Length: 309
Image (cartoon, rainbow, N blue to C red; front, side, top):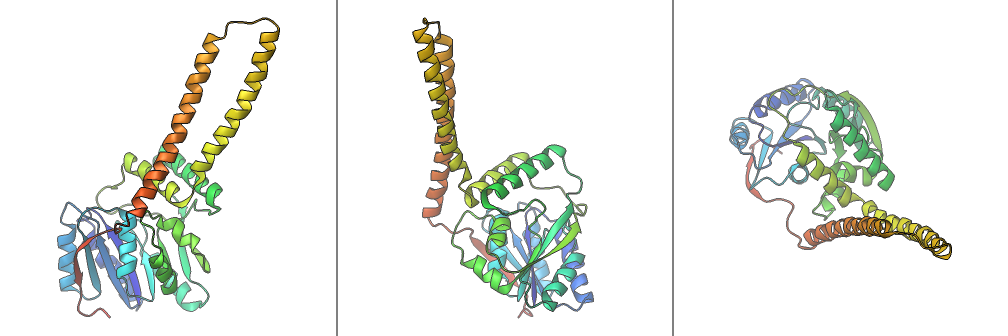
């Protein structure tokens, strides 16, 4: 059976249409499936619609969070609840074309040695140029820090049950699914797809939330920013040697006024120290969050169709 996991946040306009479209494609291709909708603390009628669909139809599971815990938590909740031999992650707005799921499924079904079928974006669709530049910078940082090339990667992918089981075993609270699903390894096949236009509603990602997501993702998957602190310290050490030699030379050849230079050096050094302390403090805060061992999410309610296996 194929489990299709669909994180949902304020998607009341998309839930029913997505269920209809995906179910129709699966049934047309005679694929045994279940839909797992994870309501990430929506403020609209998203859960009400999911609950109704689970009551009315076969093969639909609904999971309702007690509050908004974020997409990463919704993904891992879906992986935990799914019972299929393979799982597909996709967005509720149908920007991940559901027709591609059939291609992913056939690759996985017909190749015993393929454990992950990853959807790669052929293009990023209509996107703000500034956002696109920041996205490329983000993936460049991840690649240089971890060696994982995720420039065209997405959350849209099929995972074999053994991959899902290994992801479910990973205990960290601060998760980055896109990188973690690459880190676990296993044999992989790539399917290219075009990002479709959003069917209804608007993106729930604001600029602030995207920046926060990027910072959390980098800090949860790499310690590169901490190494930057060391590099800055080494550069400042070299600069101090050069300036020290320059000062001694000026002193031996007649002193000159240098009050402005001293002030600028103090301000520059203090700024670097504060930035370095900020980076270290950020990592300490993430360590603090991890050692509290609070759950990634809290489920307030579940709805499951009676005919699910």
